[in-house]
Structures are given as C-alpha cells and as structure tokens.
Amino acid sequence: MRQFTKTSLPALMLAIALSVQAPLARADEPATLRIGSVAPTGTPWSALLASVKSRVLAEAPGRIDVKLYLGGKLGSEGSLVSRCQKGSLGGIAVSVGALGAAVPELFAMELPYLFDSYKQADKALDASTPLVRKLLDAKGFVFYMWGENGFREFASKEKFFVTPADLAGQKMRSQPAMPHVEMYRALGASASTIAVGEVGSSLASGVVNGYDNTLLYAYATQWHKEIKYVTISDHIYQGAIVVWCKAWFDTLPEDLKTVLMKVPDGETTRGRLAVRAMNELLLNEYKKDGIQIRKLTAAEKAAFARATASVAKRFLEETTPAGKELYHLLEKSR
Figure 1 (cartoon, rainbow, N blue to C red):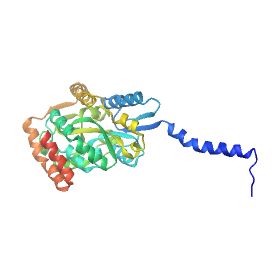
Figure 2 (figure 1 turned 180 degrees about the vertical axis):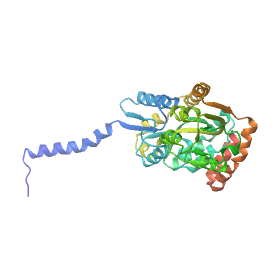
Figure 3 (figure 1 turned 60 degrees about the vertical axis):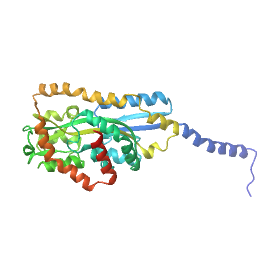
Figure 4 (figure 1 turned 135 degrees about the vertical axis):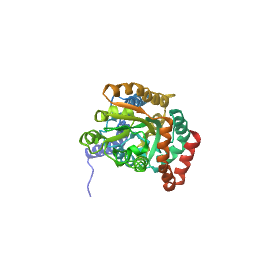
C-alpha cells in the first residue's frame, strides 16, 4: 500500500484546494453577450444597439462584455434566429418577419395593409406585447424591446406600381417570410427570396427587377443605386424586435438578468422616432440620385389592400389559436 510522505501530503492538499477554487474563478469571469443583426452601421438601428450596450456595461461593470455584430457579419436574419434558438448567441435584433420562421404566429404582424399609420402600429404592437412575450418564450426567445423597420415601399428598375396589375409578371426580391411571399403571389409577381447581401448584384444583373423594403434600409444597403422608381405604397408595416436568446439568458445570475431586461423610459419611442425622422430626408436623397417617387392615393392603396386580402385569409386558415388571438388583438387595438 502506498504511503504518503511529508512532502506529498501538502502537495495533495494544494491540488484539492485548486480543484475547489477553479470553478469559482470561472464563475467570476464576465459573461459575454454577443448580439447579431443585419442592421447596417451608421443607422438609427445601430445607434439603438450601441445605446443598449453602453447601458448594460455601465450598470454591470466588469460583469458582462457586450459585442455587437452588425451588417450581417454573423449571417442572414434566418441564420441569426436559428443560432439564437440554439443558444450560440446572446441576443439578436431582427425584423418581426424573420422571427416568424421560428414563431409563425408573428406573421400576423406583417400582413399587407394591416396598419394605415404609425399611430395604429404603435398602439397595436404595444397592446400585443404580453402575448408576443409568451409566444417568444415558448420558442426559446426572451422579448426585450420593440424596434422598427417601418413601412415598406415598392422599388423598380422599370416603372411605378400604381395598380395591382402593374406587378403581374414582375421579378421581385422578397423577404423569405410567408406574408411577403404570399403578397407577391396574390399580385401575380415572381418572388425571389434572395439574401440581403446579394440583392444589389441581383438587381444589376437582372435576376430581379425590383424589391420592397423601407426607404432607410434600402438606402443603407445601397439597393437604391440599382433602381429608378419608388412607389410609396406603405403596403406592410414592419416592426423589429430585440430579443435575448433564452438558452444563453437562463445561464445568467438573476441580477444580470434584471440589468438586461431593463428598458429605459422612452427608449422604445426614441428608437421608433429616430427611424421615422429619416423618411423625408431620404426622399430628397433618392431624388438627388435621379430616382422618381410616386405616392399612392388612398383609393390606389385600397385597391392593393383588396388584391392582397387573401394573404390574411390564408394566415387565419393555417395559424394556431394563438396566431388567431394575436391577429384579432392587433385588429382591435390599432
């Protein structure tokens, strides 16, 4: 039987002490919050995320490290949503439509002509927050705060889209989300779900001859350089959401969770207004670049709303009871 010597016993005690202390040292290391988004730098979206980062660092000094990955550096919105569900990221800032890939009930929020104004959208989204929070939690996301992409407009290399018939046969880039693809199908257009990083080259080469998005996003990504006509159609209001990834979030101590869930008073409103303030400025920038602008009349919008009503009908036929509840809540609250 092996005998311990006077020198081996202290060594053994030291080894035991180190083994006990090691986990404590690791626990004291700061958490790392990695936030991914396709939002370009130098935009109100990146400014909002920078504000979140600054606040978290200030309120939990030395406890957490925050890294922002903007402009699609970590992949498409679809990839970000998938990685968030798996817990390989700490947070994401994406469009509501992108989260719909994991939480299809959220497609209710991007149905064509659901909202006529920002005021309607604000009221409805704010009223739906408790239900949205519950839906997200069930699929691995922790709701943090609303953001905004805004009202989407049609853009084309060839012409304005003044009537639904004008879109028949057009090759349009579409966001890969049910309301967007189905909208183009209802209008007789061909919807190509091209990744955001490939839209500019696809327009230049003729793979598609148009797209729809907000004035700000299309300008920030330079898609507008490839088109000649913008139709102010306001056909889909698109909110955005900042969420924490539940698999990562649940590993944090309670005090850090509290820091991450704090939304400063007025932050959501400031974020929305910062995006909206860009629209008039951007219209002038588009015109400077030789792009023609045409705003649809109320009657013309009504014709598009009628032509795309089948999208909401299909959603209600296919969604869950919770999806129906969300849709009716949005309608009632707007």
